[in-house]
Image 1 (spheres, rainbow, N blue to C red):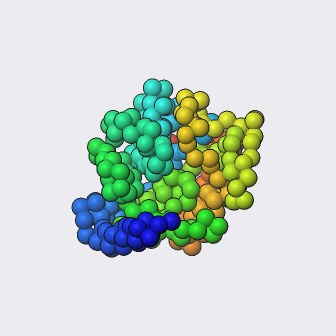
Image 2 (cartoon, rainbow, N blue to C red):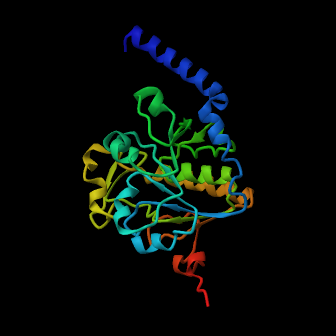
Image 3 (tube, rainbow, N blue to C red):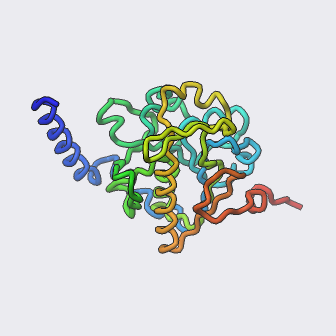
Length: 267
């Protein structure tokens, strides 16, 4: 690496550090601060895009507070349900789907601040947060204050859990987080193929999969364990309501046995 590139790298890091220190005082920082405890004591559902996810399950969540991600919009033609909060942070997914994401008519859409900063990518109704990266060999930290940053866990579901805790939710249910893919990579760099696994709720979801990152579930498992540790210490319940899948960090519950407000009958 040339001396010029080394200097440019140090300059970029210093500039980013300065911006991050000032972020809480910016418009974006203050918008995030407004989310503090806005859902105090309530429950929410964090929706993954796994093959177990169905439109019928989402129909039951129309009266619930939900988080959803990335290309969940491929489900929108099958259900009237829409997420309360939408998040996306994978750069390749965003680069390939920025038009579709920008066209989503949702009140809350959250992204890492580096997209407008580094790529000049801005979204309508966009809210932005600092995404803090760490050593993937270790469990990530868990953010107590999302205004100062959210910790990366190799899954946007971990970001959503940190957001949910900041908002004051005390009951968090995961749905459609199958935690298993047809092609994965482990911490040794080995690629693992499982021909029996399906990646998402529709094959259309990752038709460009050769351009996307290969998932590493070892890293995301550590993130989910970090979330459980934080939740257990802070009287927060996280349940896995996914139908099947391979995520065994959280207590499993039967989605069909959860009571939903919109199932009440008026006599």
